[in-house]
Image (cartoon, rainbow, N blue to C red; front, side, top):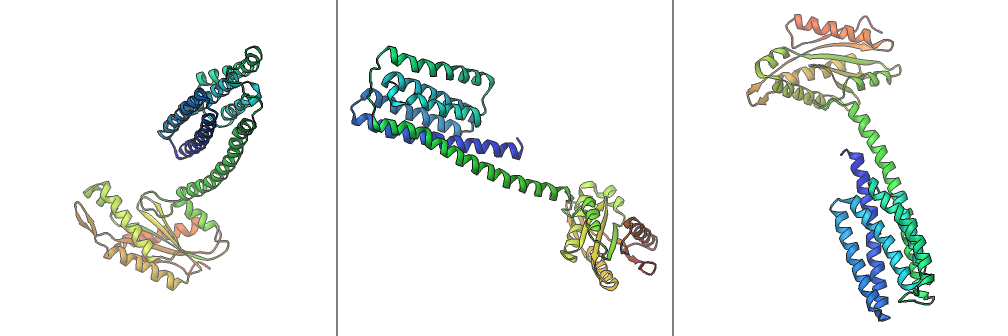
Length: 347
């Protein structure tokens, strides 16, 4: 189950818990009322209803949301039907069926068989409970009881109001969550999963946003990286790249571009930075990697970087990167572990 599905499940679970707790409180009040009227049978029924909703609440808490939802809706239908048959139409219990319909239609995820049971029983019981009290006198008929009239009216009004508020709360929370997810997805799309530096996609976007500003670009490559992989294995090679990434983070500024360009290549960019200052930073990077001792399960490892640097001041960045790449390989041929730069031909 992905993150979004899990959030939706939690929302329905919370929504159902509130309805079940409301039902427990409501039937507790109703049970006390029947007890004061000495209607023992109806009092015992209220106790049974409370226990039923408690069990449904425990099932819901255990994560069996669909089963708990079905039990809740079916219990509402049964309760409405039984109350009308026992006490007559005057108490308006038949309107409680609207609550079950509200749950079925808007919020609960039922299986096909459960839907069939609910949608068949709903109109059938609605009609039956309207007809039978007119034919057979209810055994516990109560004549226009003010308390029950208010009680059953609020049994519908309160959950409906709670439902609207919950729907607003859930929708608002989902909107915030959606915006947060989008931001996280965008960030993840721009991050190299190994080094946690920005990736090539982000670098290209960064350069596009320079909007005419000059930017000193430095392209660097881990020296003899293939030999590291061949000697120690790719897992150790990954550790080396992670350590290089750490040096880059420690040496550069927050406003700088720092990315894994691909493989063992890295790219840095220093907007509105002088040649002198940019070369000092690149030299700090080179020296930082050279001085770094990398502890691995196969012993200590030291690596070096070769860097090529040039200034990008607009136009096609590929030309500047080609110059950086050319300088990088000149540095490789010159013995590696060096910063090579060229600025004279650029404005």
